[in-house]
Length: 314
Image (cartoon, rainbow, N blue to C red; front, side, top):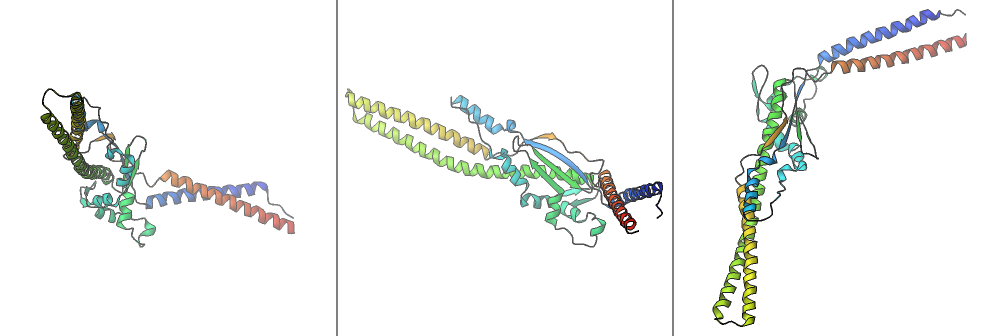
């Protein structure tokens, strides 16, 4: 039985590994070059509650009336609400109607631009993605539930469009929050107006009771009548305090109806990306090389098993 020299077997394996790695490198480069390039832009914002002029005005009113300062739980700053609005179909549909300008200076609506984007070569004749799916993929959002910071990521095959997606999303979010806040303010104002009117009615009723008792009892008054008048005077003071509080709360809610803008702090401003984020050539190269090495290991194992069986039979 003639054995194959060990050196030639190792050389064969080296050539196999080298050739597979070269094929993997070439394949990964061709594969990456065939994919459409995509760019991303990130914008981070947060609602600036310190610029809420209405709340500041209300707090000054409270100080002048010697009342506790109101710490308003503004519904527009709730992270769960922001998360829900950013994921809503309403926001996506409005985004699709907005105008965007490409790096070449051409203007489209966002939905027309997304429908005209290049597809991967393997899907040229395949089914086109629905517009809702494209709008879902072009914008990714994240809301930090601890500090309320909103991260908006725009993704497109044009870097200028990716940057504009983040700007459009922030602007539309501000408009939706403004409408939502105004609607809540109108409802609260109507409710507080009823409470104010009720407290005013109670105050006037206490005044009438006091006046009727005072008019019915001339001087000198009995001790029991004096005590009753003092009790009615306390009722008037309590009713007046309740009316003043209800009126102040109504005025605050009424001022919120005229709120014109939601203020945002820009934490990380968007920028036009210079380098595409996809395809990731280096990652694709590593994946292809890993599969090439796995194929080499499998091929060498099969070769060794086949040789052992052949030699065993001989």
